[in-house]
Image 1 (tube, rainbow, N blue to C red):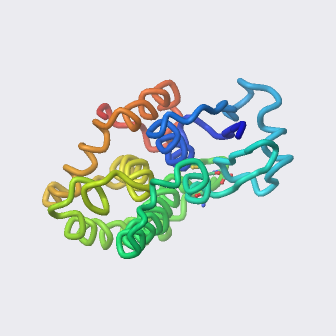
Image 2 (image 1 turned 120 degrees about the vertical axis):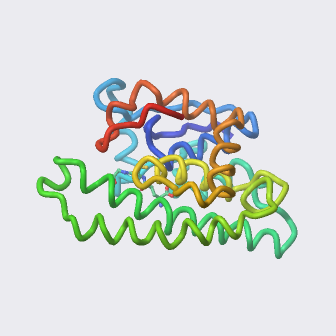
Length: 215
Ligand SMILES: N[C@@H](CCC(=O)N[C@@H](CS)C(=O)NCC(=O)O)C(=O)O
Protein backbone atom coordinates (compact mmCIF):
# COMPACT_ATOMS: atom_id res chain seq x y z
CA UNK A 1 0.00 0.00 0.00
CA UNK A 2 1.10 3.59 -0.78
CA UNK A 3 -0.31 5.81 1.91
CA UNK A 4 -0.95 9.54 1.93
CA UNK A 5 -2.45 11.18 5.00
CA UNK A 6 -4.11 14.56 4.50
CA UNK A 7 -4.47 16.56 7.67
CA UNK A 8 -3.41 19.53 9.77
CA UNK A 9 -0.56 19.21 12.29
CA UNK A 10 -2.62 20.99 14.98
CA UNK A 11 -5.80 18.94 14.46
CA UNK A 12 -6.79 16.47 17.15
CA UNK A 13 -8.25 13.95 14.72
CA UNK A 14 -5.16 14.19 12.52
CA UNK A 15 -3.11 13.41 15.64
CA UNK A 16 -5.28 10.38 16.26
CA UNK A 17 -4.36 8.85 12.89
CA UNK A 18 -0.72 10.00 13.12
CA UNK A 19 -0.30 8.34 16.52
CA UNK A 20 -1.32 4.97 15.04
CA UNK A 21 1.00 5.45 12.06
CA UNK A 22 3.92 6.41 14.31
CA UNK A 23 3.20 3.59 16.77
CA UNK A 24 3.42 1.03 13.97
CA UNK A 25 6.29 2.67 12.03
CA UNK A 26 4.07 2.62 8.96
CA UNK A 27 5.60 4.51 6.00
CA UNK A 28 3.36 7.25 4.63
CA UNK A 29 3.45 10.71 3.09
CA UNK A 30 1.93 13.51 5.17
CA UNK A 31 0.03 16.02 3.05
CA UNK A 32 -0.28 19.10 5.19
CA UNK A 33 -3.37 21.19 4.47
CA UNK A 34 -2.40 24.03 6.82
CA UNK A 35 -3.27 27.41 5.34
CA UNK A 36 -1.56 28.28 2.08
CA UNK A 37 1.74 26.72 3.11
CA UNK A 38 1.36 23.69 0.87
CA UNK A 39 -0.47 24.70 -2.31
CA UNK A 40 -2.40 21.90 -3.94
CA UNK A 41 -2.86 19.74 -0.87
CA UNK A 42 -6.18 21.27 0.16
CA UNK A 43 -7.62 21.02 -3.35
CA UNK A 44 -6.50 17.39 -3.64
CA UNK A 45 -8.01 16.66 -0.22
CA UNK A 46 -11.37 18.27 -1.08
CA UNK A 47 -11.47 16.45 -4.41
CA UNK A 48 -11.46 13.19 -2.46
CA UNK A 49 -13.68 14.34 0.41
CA UNK A 50 -15.88 17.37 -0.24
CA UNK A 51 -17.20 17.21 3.33
CA UNK A 52 -13.80 18.63 4.28
CA UNK A 53 -13.24 16.84 7.58
CA UNK A 54 -9.73 15.63 8.19
CA UNK A 55 -7.80 13.40 8.44
CA UNK A 56 -8.26 11.56 5.18
CA UNK A 57 -6.13 8.60 4.16
CA UNK A 58 -5.57 7.73 0.53
CA UNK A 59 -4.28 4.20 -0.03
CA UNK A 60 -3.21 3.56 -3.62
CA UNK A 61 -5.81 6.09 -4.74
CA UNK A 62 -8.59 4.75 -2.50
CA UNK A 63 -9.87 7.42 -0.06
CA UNK A 64 -10.59 6.32 3.51
CA UNK A 65 -12.45 8.75 5.75
CA UNK A 66 -12.89 8.84 9.53
CA UNK A 67 -9.98 8.52 11.94
CA UNK A 68 -11.11 5.26 13.60
CA UNK A 69 -11.56 3.58 10.21
CA UNK A 70 -8.17 4.87 9.09
CA UNK A 71 -6.55 3.38 12.21
CA UNK A 72 -8.25 -0.01 11.75
CA UNK A 73 -6.95 0.04 8.15
CA UNK A 74 -3.31 0.95 8.85
CA UNK A 75 -2.91 -0.60 12.30
CA UNK A 76 -5.39 -3.47 12.76
CA UNK A 77 -3.58 -4.64 15.91
CA UNK A 78 -4.80 -1.45 17.60
CA UNK A 79 -8.06 -3.33 18.14
CA UNK A 80 -7.44 -6.54 20.09
CA UNK A 81 -8.68 -9.92 18.89
CA UNK A 82 -10.46 -10.70 22.15
CA UNK A 83 -14.14 -9.87 21.70
CA UNK A 84 -14.73 -8.29 25.11
CA UNK A 85 -11.52 -6.27 25.00
CA UNK A 86 -12.27 -5.14 21.44
CA UNK A 87 -15.68 -3.88 22.61
CA UNK A 88 -14.07 -1.92 25.45
CA UNK A 89 -11.51 -0.41 23.04
CA UNK A 90 -14.14 0.59 20.47
CA UNK A 91 -16.49 1.91 23.15
CA UNK A 92 -13.81 4.13 24.69
CA UNK A 93 -12.79 5.30 21.22
CA UNK A 94 -16.37 6.48 20.66
CA UNK A 95 -16.59 8.02 24.15
CA UNK A 96 -13.39 10.03 23.68
CA UNK A 97 -14.55 11.26 20.26
CA UNK A 98 -18.20 11.91 21.04
CA UNK A 99 -18.13 12.94 24.69
CA UNK A 100 -14.70 14.54 25.10
CA UNK A 101 -13.66 15.83 21.68
CA UNK A 102 -17.11 16.95 20.50
CA UNK A 103 -17.78 19.28 23.46
CA UNK A 104 -14.18 20.47 23.30
CA UNK A 105 -14.60 21.34 19.61
CA UNK A 106 -17.82 23.19 20.51
CA UNK A 107 -16.02 25.38 23.06
CA UNK A 108 -13.19 26.05 20.60
CA UNK A 109 -15.59 26.80 17.73
CA UNK A 110 -17.44 29.39 19.82
CA UNK A 111 -14.13 31.24 20.20
CA UNK A 112 -13.37 31.33 16.46
CA UNK A 113 -14.70 34.63 15.07
CA UNK A 114 -14.74 33.33 11.49
CA UNK A 115 -17.13 30.54 12.60
CA UNK A 116 -19.14 32.41 15.24
CA UNK A 117 -18.83 36.20 15.28
CA UNK A 118 -20.83 36.28 18.53
CA UNK A 119 -20.01 33.41 20.90
CA UNK A 120 -23.04 31.36 21.97
CA UNK A 121 -22.53 31.32 25.74
CA UNK A 122 -25.28 28.72 26.15
CA UNK A 123 -23.51 26.32 23.82
CA UNK A 124 -20.25 26.90 25.67
CA UNK A 125 -21.90 26.21 29.03
CA UNK A 126 -23.56 23.03 27.73
CA UNK A 127 -20.23 21.81 26.39
CA UNK A 128 -18.50 22.55 29.71
CA UNK A 129 -21.29 20.70 31.54
CA UNK A 130 -20.85 17.71 29.23
CA UNK A 131 -17.12 17.58 30.06
CA UNK A 132 -17.95 17.90 33.77
CA UNK A 133 -20.03 14.73 33.42
CA UNK A 134 -17.52 12.68 31.47
CA UNK A 135 -14.36 13.58 33.46
CA UNK A 136 -15.47 11.75 36.64
CA UNK A 137 -16.72 8.78 34.64
CA UNK A 138 -13.39 8.46 32.85
CA UNK A 139 -11.51 8.91 36.13
CA UNK A 140 -13.31 5.86 37.47
CA UNK A 141 -13.06 3.79 34.29
CA UNK A 142 -9.31 4.29 33.93
CA UNK A 143 -8.53 3.32 37.53
CA UNK A 144 -5.96 0.54 37.71
CA UNK A 145 -5.20 0.70 33.98
CA UNK A 146 -1.96 1.77 32.31
CA UNK A 147 -3.78 2.56 29.07
CA UNK A 148 -7.38 3.40 28.33
CA UNK A 149 -8.67 -0.15 27.93
CA UNK A 150 -6.10 -2.03 30.03
CA UNK A 151 -2.41 -2.79 29.75
CA UNK A 152 -2.08 -2.54 25.96
CA UNK A 153 -1.95 0.72 24.01
CA UNK A 154 -4.87 0.69 21.55
CA UNK A 155 -7.23 2.60 19.29
CA UNK A 156 -8.81 3.97 22.49
CA UNK A 157 -5.54 5.71 23.38
CA UNK A 158 -5.15 7.12 19.86
CA UNK A 159 -8.49 8.86 20.57
CA UNK A 160 -7.94 9.46 24.28
CA UNK A 161 -4.65 11.34 24.12
CA UNK A 162 -5.62 14.07 21.60
CA UNK A 163 -9.11 14.56 23.02
CA UNK A 164 -7.87 14.94 26.62
CA UNK A 165 -4.96 17.10 25.48
CA UNK A 166 -7.30 19.72 24.05
CA UNK A 167 -10.16 19.20 26.51
CA UNK A 168 -7.80 20.10 29.35
CA UNK A 169 -6.85 23.28 27.51
CA UNK A 170 -10.47 24.24 26.86
CA UNK A 171 -11.92 23.14 30.21
CA UNK A 172 -9.20 22.02 32.65
CA UNK A 173 -9.57 18.62 34.29
CA UNK A 174 -10.01 19.27 38.04
CA UNK A 175 -7.18 18.06 40.30
CA UNK A 176 -9.56 15.71 42.10
CA UNK A 177 -9.55 13.47 39.01
CA UNK A 178 -5.99 12.34 39.61
CA UNK A 179 -6.32 9.11 37.63
CA UNK A 180 -7.50 10.96 34.55
CA UNK A 181 -4.79 13.61 34.88
CA UNK A 182 -2.15 10.91 35.35
CA UNK A 183 -3.42 9.09 32.24
CA UNK A 184 -3.16 12.31 30.21
CA UNK A 185 0.37 12.94 31.51
CA UNK A 186 1.41 9.33 30.80
CA UNK A 187 0.05 9.60 27.26
CA UNK A 188 2.00 12.82 26.63
CA UNK A 189 5.17 10.97 27.62
CA UNK A 190 4.70 8.26 25.00
CA UNK A 191 7.03 8.87 22.00
CA UNK A 192 4.34 8.73 19.29
CA UNK A 193 2.23 11.25 21.21
CA UNK A 194 5.13 13.48 22.21
CA UNK A 195 5.98 13.58 18.50
CA UNK A 196 2.56 14.85 17.35
CA UNK A 197 2.55 17.41 20.17
CA UNK A 198 6.03 18.62 19.18
CA UNK A 199 5.21 18.79 15.47
CA UNK A 200 2.22 20.99 16.29
CA UNK A 201 4.08 23.50 18.48
CA UNK A 202 4.52 26.06 15.66
CA UNK A 203 0.72 26.18 15.32
CA UNK A 204 -0.14 26.83 18.98
CA UNK A 205 -0.87 30.47 18.26
CA UNK A 206 -3.97 29.20 16.41
CA UNK A 207 -5.63 27.99 19.63
CA UNK A 208 -8.39 30.57 20.00
CA UNK A 209 -8.64 30.46 23.79
CA UNK A 210 -4.89 31.01 24.04
CA UNK A 211 -2.62 28.00 24.45
CA UNK A 212 -1.56 27.52 28.08
CA UNK A 213 2.17 27.71 28.81
CA UNK A 214 2.54 23.97 29.48
CA UNK A 215 2.46 20.55 27.80
N1 LIG B 1 -15.34 11.98 12.82
C1 LIG B 1 -14.21 12.61 12.15
C2 LIG B 1 -13.99 13.97 12.77
C3 LIG B 1 -12.97 14.78 12.00
C4 LIG B 1 -12.93 16.25 12.42
O1 LIG B 1 -13.85 16.78 13.08
N2 LIG B 1 -11.85 16.91 12.02
C5 LIG B 1 -11.72 18.35 12.26
C6 LIG B 1 -10.26 18.68 12.58
S1 LIG B 1 -9.75 18.04 14.13
C7 LIG B 1 -12.05 19.10 10.98
O2 LIG B 1 -12.01 18.54 9.92
N3 LIG B 1 -12.34 20.39 11.10
C8 LIG B 1 -12.52 21.22 9.94
C9 LIG B 1 -13.94 21.53 9.65
O3 LIG B 1 -14.83 21.11 10.41
O4 LIG B 1 -14.18 22.22 8.66
C10 LIG B 1 -12.98 11.71 12.30
O5 LIG B 1 -12.91 10.91 13.24
O6 LIG B 1 -12.10 11.74 11.42
